[in-house]
Image 1 (cartoon, one colour):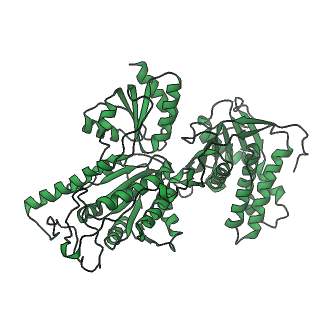
Image 2: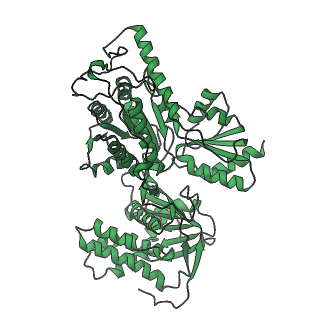
Length: 618
């Protein structure tokens, strides 16, 4: 250490919650330290919500504004619904990270900067004519400059590593500082380092040393005159994991297959931000999970349809443009009436668009985007952990009604994480494959009188041999039919089958009063921001409630009744009003829209401002 240990007493302040943002160059390991910090907070007993925010480009020039990667986390002692609007603490590894993020930091907040990175060249790349750490630009913030490069090099001067290898460890130095400030344990990250770098023990040792050195530096210097303790979150007893939305979806598919006692088949073509589902499932191949990485999206869904015909619980995953490519095959899944789960992790579009940024603009494509009369079920997850519940529900409906089901997630949910309580078996929904009729009575397109589902007689099952395909089927026997009246009948039966899924939809839950001035209706990833904004509005005395919709098609049967109890309806969404249009068409109502298409999630402040604007004008 460069400074002698301080004898100054460090004050420990207790906080209910805090929002921290790590930011740096794409090569600074920002996502890595962010995830490690999130895991440490979860193990410490805090509730949390995270938001990884990284560039779409494979690698922008080092130190450029376009290459800035961020990871925001909000953690606290009560239910944390969002990763926070503005960080209370901003950690920047270079000037570009400061330039990109300072506009979202309130005055008085803390900025911890790697001062070694603020050299002339880096400042010019970030657009600074002078050093903001020294020229008074940041006078309204509490700035803590730390020479992280120098301190890391000093720590590892005898390690035998090259300077380049040493400087790659500097993110752990900053992480050690943050662990000290918030009283978080080093052990979980130390254990992770041992596993991650087990093939390179010299790097494992170096990263452990640097992590510990960062914590020791904070303890020894007088720069950090305060530490913070976040109260533990009161949570239900059980085993928890910190899961991303993609991991939760993957585990839901495995769970559904286990409950059905069928093999899981997942066909997919890698695409951001859905790829992590494929990667997670690939780790469980020895557990009755088959993953098939195909040459394109079309092959992925067609292989999955084939696997479903063979009796597997079949699923495929993709993102925006990938869903477009799967469109024709979704029609095949509809007409063959086979169960199939399609996870669509929405991102900014159209076309390649913003691959790493979030949006909610595939709703209409999911509900309506097919040729012919081709209805299917669409569900939307509302949080990273809810990706588990929603995907499991999709699998249940797919099997019960013999239909493809789309699960809508997005980049905000798929990359974000939160604590997930691992459910007990008895808490999970009932999963049954409907019993087959006797072979002598079997017809491929005979229907369950309640659900209108046809029998799931898998290929090769003796006594149940039949053909399927994309041509229209004859009612009952499933033979190819071009009869006009039969086509209309089959189209009506397929539509009625999807409409009957409404019988499985629970009553719409209203948060707040059941009637009043304003109802905020959301779907998908806006749940946390809406809930937080509505809670804040109610604390100020405003008469506002909220309802969040998971079942996008068919819509909940009571949704129209619920909405008509309120004088005004607000629909916040990250598109130009797709759900608002669906509500207008279904209920002849005129909801007010709050729309954002910036590749960034709506936050609670934006929704709260709109709520106040509406109620002031009422």
